[in-house]
Length: 262
Image (spheres, rainbow, N blue to C red):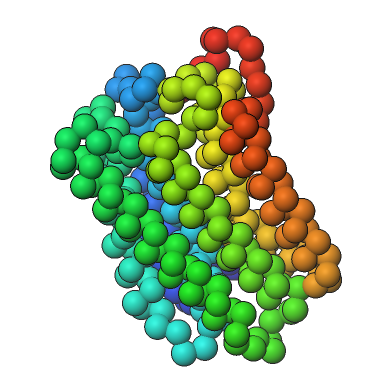
């Protein structure tokens, strides 16, 4: 781990430190979720900024590592686009959490509706930029990278993009619960519904292909074809959980109504 951190800091110091900031903030949010009583939809308000900050930390370090492989890539512009846009999203989510207000799906005033739209635009811009990075990995040659690892990065980027845009499904419905209202019983910390369909499951699985597939290829799977098989199985899993959610079925069904979501 120490070698990885030192190399990442050398390759991309902006993403290295931005990831550290997001990691630190996610820890603060997690502590606040256990020490404060502010709730949104029956869930501790600080759970949501924790998840967004931690996810951004993982994205920042992964992309900081991969983009360093790209030839003639404007790394500084990419870095600051991500830092500004995702930083804006995290800050607004945290502000709303502190106020006990919804950040997403909040159309209760023109201001909140505008901020929700701006968050959607920020997330979309980062996803489109990530798709561009995926395209660069497809059209460029990387003779110094193992073929299996290269294809893992390629597949990871495209699966990430597809399931990142899946967020529009939830945005169009103004809910992340299918078959019931937001805020019901859910799995601890993740808060995925244990009673109704929840597209956030597929959103989570698909987006974190970005870290998992290259990690597996780098350390464990040295064969290109096995990497592609694993990537397709992973894509199938994410797709299955999305179909399951659209049919109103939870990932894990829990009959009792006493499941804590804190």
